[in-house]
Length: 211
Image (tube, rainbow, N blue to C red; front, top):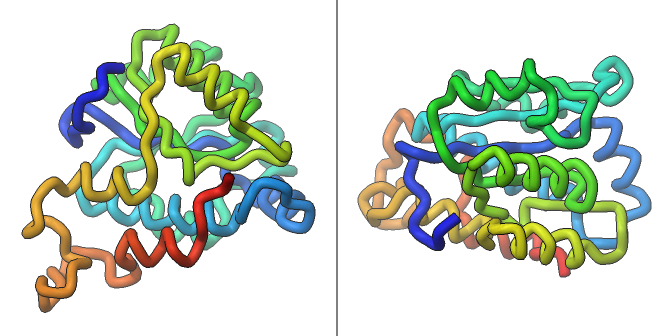
């Protein structure tokens, strides 16, 4: 991916395996930052994606009856036109039934979030790059149970992914001051904008980026 600005007309949001089984299992033995902080940033991205009509895909690792769907905090704000992909492979584009979902979106790049950085995120990103997609990694919206996920992140960058962050992405999507309803001077907030959306700066400060 060239290091050019992300465009809502040509890009989409991909969230990998944010399922209750993993979130609840790992919440009590975290080694790399706050998984609930990652979930909160993704919740805000869902709200922003819905408002901007940004193509959004959420993946779910089988068996779903064990791992679950999105937790309620994410399900309640999942974009109305979002797509759900169910996978057995760690790579979300390894199975023919899922490749069609991505192709039908008609876009060429994805901002990637989710868990785990060194397994399903890593293999999905490599699969997307191999399939000709461009990838923007939102580092503070990724999580793994391992104490250090730098190796997998560096491999994804070496393969062609571009680095990004939650706050950077929010402002990159909106581009103009007049298109940022969360800013203090824009009152009242437009009716169509989600009332639960906080300033990106406040979300980041509340849930620090994992080291």
